[in-house]
Image 1 (spheres, rainbow, N blue to C red):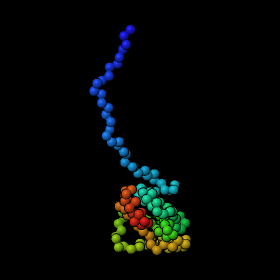
Image 2: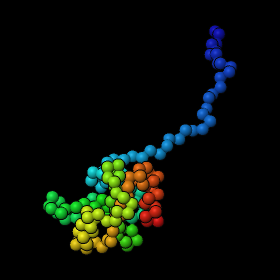
Image 3: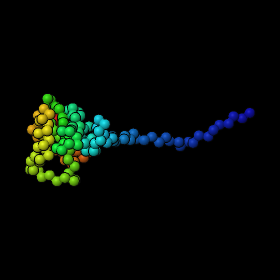
Image 4: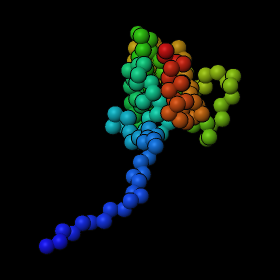
Length: 145
């Protein structure tokens, strides 16, 4: 009986990729920080600042729903120093560079001091400084490193 041989192509060249394509690291935003609803800007800042400080997100000042009730975006603790931070979406709000503290900030500071939290000012960070992962990292580094 005759043996059957399978034909193999003579010019078979395996095509191998010269470089393995690496996926770019994608940013995953959930819309929540510690179970509390957050904007993309707030979540991006929280991720960046968590390397340098512990924080409380959406800290109520006063009784929610009562007159004069306020909320602070972030109260940060780094190296024994408390820092109050508000993330501002400046696409809707226009605040001049030299406008100083606004009445809401003064009310928040007074409310924090009643709670025993000693802060002198509230740092406002506009959306351009936390619009990307890289800019948020740079902002957090400039504040705390």
